[in-house]
Image (cartoon, rainbow over all chains, first blue to last red; front, side, top):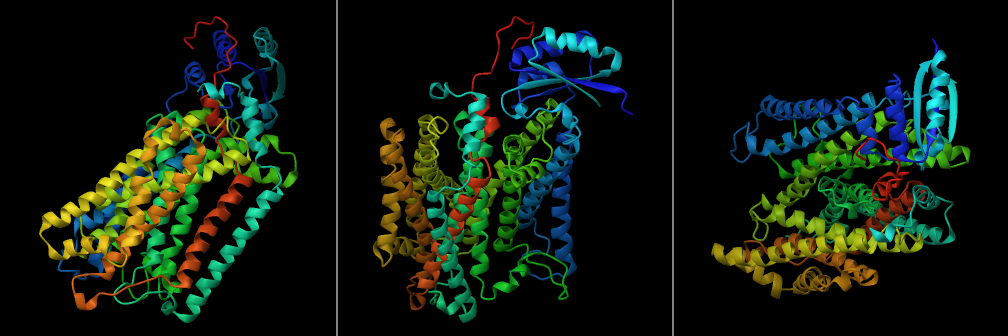
Length: 170
Length: 447
């Protein structure tokens, strides 16, 4: 299983990190992860990942919420019809409030679910390939490659001025 | 932001995480009395449950009193938290960065406090769950046409979404604390809470989108919640309540009071934890400008209520507003006008907006004024309805005052726990307004 090798370079600068990613990509290494203490547009641009699909969770969650709101209010009102203030049994204006709130509630819950499923928390990188300074002020580039390429990756990372390089099987 | 130029990424971590060090004597000196007041509030509530609602000051015709005032007050306080965290996020207003975590925490704790009051207000509080729609042996469903039920949905949705939004914003910061703390119990706790966050580009990609969508959901939600609360009143046809301006009037008032509370909370925290480089005068300047705007809106609403009452030609409506300014409760009315309309006027001057002490004092008056605003709307309207034979005077009893004081203590108790357990300033977002660490190499990226 563990045929691949992980190589991690630690950097202090964003532009150096971005440049390193470009060099690695030019050299044919595409299995990359960049660690950073904050989101950064340059890193996002150079990594060129597909657009997050969390948005579909949001959309479908909101639509499901609205549908639940309609179904809930209408079905329970018709289940035991009681005339209140001579208003229609199914009276849309007051139900809109409930439909609106459920749209947001289920939409938000579904968005959170989308994040938890897609962000692959815990599975992004093995523990050995993480450095606590990534949440402080350091940037990391992790390359997953076969064992033969480790030296080449190491050369690229050190030529870019990596402050530290770590290795582990991944 | 020139005032933040000496900050570095590492210092941000160090300064913010240092706030979570072992509680000091000062903290305990605040926390223990707070617990005492919570205990007193609890005692008052138990006394009320044991003796019945008679121990509250309810007298015919006023059966919505201080508890409902407290409910509306606390829901209102919650609002500026979401304004700062969601609406200002969508507007990319950088002055929110340092204060949004405190404001969000305030939102969550204020909604937690507000949620207690409808239950305290019930004659049989143990039956509170009847408010929720669930299949039951009576085969009855709740009345979806009642504004009180809209409130159940709006407030519980608001509590859920604002808590999740609060937690979502905390994930990268909890990871930063996890990476820093040494002692095992705290390490375990923060490791579990951080959900394994490592700060990879893949996580940030989904995280930033999720945060954006949450902000987009929270924005209409926050506007809806206080509108729904205002409809608790506006949907009935009582003079003083039955008006279409209530929703925007309540929302503006809520943001106004919430901003007041954010300043009341942040000024001492800034001083005690030496956060002057984080919560800057620019931040306060931005908040003070929002206070001016919302103060003008509530001031306009106070005026237009009189115009509507006069223009409607309804003697009941006009009688109600005449009573507000001249009747037995006139003192409370004028306290509200002075605190909410007159006292914020000096904020038009930049020197006042950037004077932290002046802001703190003004914010205290705003809190007081906004509490009285809700009291005036609720109690004065009820005490003089349509029928002069049914007019009456209500004054809160010691039990109601005790529970109100307890609610403030309950809110501050959560807040004090929060500043010692979770990063009170967003570590990741503070870094976003600092200069990006670049070496200045000549790459082919546009940077």
